[in-house]
Image 1 (tube, rainbow, N blue to C red):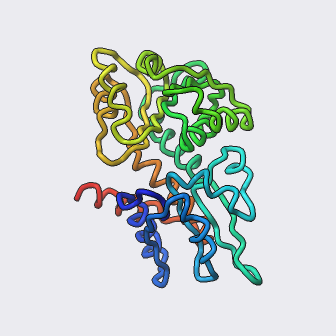
Image 2: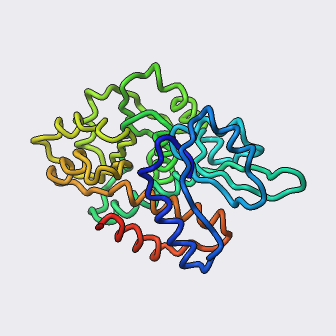
Image 3: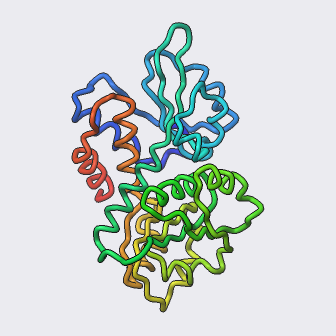
Length: 276
């Protein structure tokens, strides 16, 4: 796992549990604090002993031009959270993939199963404009919502997201953070992709409102977030960010090992860590 900062990541818990369950006793998974400036040098050191890398911010965009190949979904989204190290004569071939979309879809489906099926097209709100927001647009497209409302601090800083949406063929409506609470209250799905505490203002604005939809806050530390607490108090269904992390990690395990991920064992390890 590479990123900056990265020490808080639960990914080692998930991957190590998977390797143990699969009997891969000689496999290791660790984290390494790597900035965007350090990334080219780190990638240059990879050899045949590596199977892959997990990436978190700020590396999901930075890594793209440094790879030999990028899988179609990751290319469309414009964000890579998984690097597969494929052995070849000479140096390894580095392939970029995106498992965040898989994780988002699976986590949202868990939440949608907890509420009555609605009539009409799925409505959705996305908070944020970074790499995870782009993956969220792709996930919502897979769930049947191609016109979500995206709420962000500045449209001028959303160029990457706007270009990704265009490549995906989705047509978001962009608005400021000041309208996010009203939009979220009426949505079937809300996904907050902003860092820890950045959605605390939105949480405060939800006071006194009633909601009916599913919230996925990708932040899992601290847990629960202020937004998750406010959403549950307002009557909505909450899916913790750790559920997205679980499912995207399971897909990474499948891609890196070539074997079906032991989801139950990974889930048990995650629950044990969070309970401790």
